[in-house]
Image 1 (cartoon, rainbow, N blue to C red):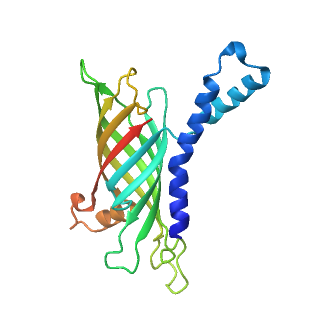
Image 2: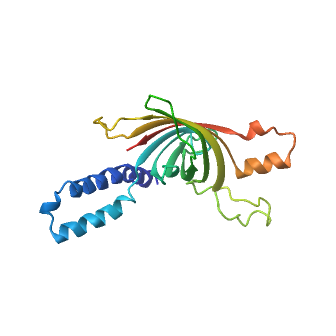
Image 3: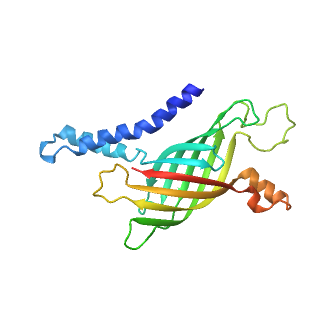
Length: 221
């Protein structure tokens, strides 16, 4: 399992760069030298380009592992939507083995406020919904037969999460030779479905006690 996770992680990060290289090669061919076949190939590559992930993320904590890495897509007229696929590492602590957490995350960032006369941009609100799954056989999606029906009432493998946060972004000038368009530092406060159930079911628990903090870095390529 560790080998398969490592291979998946390598493909996750290498594939975007390989595909971007192919697209850029096609784009560099002058129009006067292109044949009908080359033009058709270029159009196909442009369609594929939309599927190429355009950013990387590194995150600390946040209910998806102690440390997480991932890639994803930034899109929308104002680049206000993000979709991420991330892999997190969860140390064994009191359990028998270390674990890997797979996360699919959707984020919405409605505003971008540029600091006048600078390359800094503040994003005052980010809203995220994400599903996380622990890749371990001891966690289950359907309640095992050894428990009475409805004993748990939820899956131990899959968690639904909600988080809110803020970001500050440094917009790299176009004249730069960097392959990164911008760099963002962010934080998020969130909780999962079982945390919300616990909070609403037990009034002695304070809301701040169910929140988890995440701090991360995004590279937009």
